[in-house]
Image 1 (cartoon, helix red, strand yellow):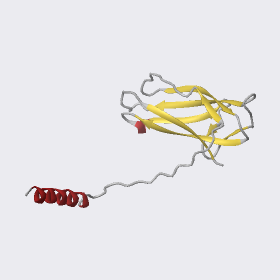
Image 2 (cartoon, rainbow, N blue to C red):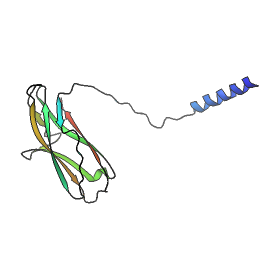
Image 3 (cartoon, one colour):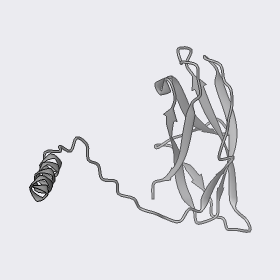
Image 4 (tube, helix red, strand yellow):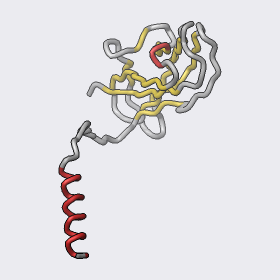
Length: 141
């Protein structure tokens, strides 16, 4: 009797497992490369009011060969679509995918440094609360 009960229980578990449907599946390809570009500061915390634009200067340092880069970001928070982030050189020229920031070569003893202004514009309709903005520096090569 115990053996019969164990077999029925086993078959029920196997049948339940076979009836499971996969609702979401994803594959991520990851290419790990050596990083020779840094951004400082890497973390900023600030209180900003709705309808205000906040500007923070960051230093981009290149310790390797010449390269052209651009920024992207991910915004998390109550209303992430109400937060706009854009980047400018100190002379006011925009930095984006089409107008990259080109960095000269540098090394550990003498890095190539440039200052970039990060503009965070909070729309007047943004919900109050804490937002996280993750900045990513990408190279086209």
